Amino acid sequence: MSLKIDTTGHRVFRVFNGLFLLLVALTMLVPILSVFRDSIDFQPRSTLRLALIPREPTLFYYRRVINDASIYRPFLNSILITAIGTTLSLFVNSMAAYTMSRRDIRGNVFFVYFLVIIPMVVGGGGIIANFVWFRALGILNTYAVMILPMVASGFYMIIVRTFYWSIPYSLTESAQLDGASEFEIYRTIIAPLSKAVYAAIALFAGVAYWNNWLHAFMFVHNPRLFPFPVKLRAMLFLTQDAERLLQEWALQQGLNLQEVMVTFEGTSSAIVMVSIIPILLIYPYLQRYFAQGVRIGAIKG
Picture 1 (cartoon, rainbow, N blue to C red):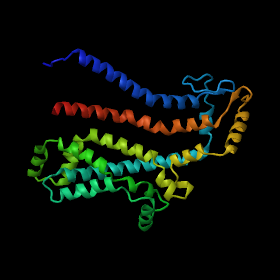
Picture 2: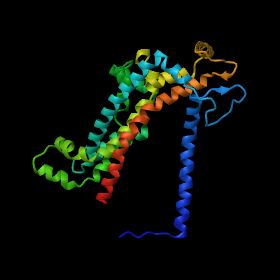
Picture 3: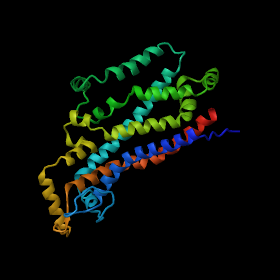
Picture 4: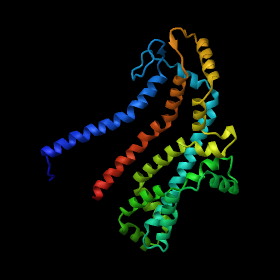
């Protein structure tokens, strides 16, 4: 039997909490809606202003993006880098967290400080140090330079290790008594019970890999290896020639430039919306594991 507390203070708190969360949601949602509106709307020359509702809906900017063949290879590069990097990151961090979660293993404290505390405090050493290190490894101007530096993360290890501690030790102890190896315990007991935290780490790592452009910008000079964020950055900072070419393409499509204003901001907004489509498609799939993790936690509680 649950006791429901319904006092004036709790009602005020719920109202204030709801209004605060609504304000936070609007703060995040309004910029996205504004960019989406710019990507599907022609702006009349007489009314160039900020708005969320399109006045003259169009798919012109998306057709322009689709007809730009130069975006496809960077897009596929980002998919490849994100898929491989997320898989490696999930495996490495979950295995390292399993080692650190075993309090009976010698050197556990050393691993925590060496792999988690020191990197989080000191950092990666800077761009020059990373360049020297990557050149020594021979991974400059390769896909590996955009994948390997982000595989291990002390933050992810701490999250996964904390989740491992919530799994009853009796499960792993009984498996040890039956002669199971550490990897068998991890594969057959720990991993199946940790889908919720794995989904969270996969989402964090996937978004980080998908949005990462610094490593490609600094350590890759082959345009065929560039990921989508580098292409997006290049398109957002194009010269006035791009505006002229866009207007010429609009005339070829039969648009009257005296009535509507075709701006490069519309194309850049369409590019930005295309860049977040993969995350929007993957998140609902991972959401069910979050819900499952909440139910497991409630049962354990």
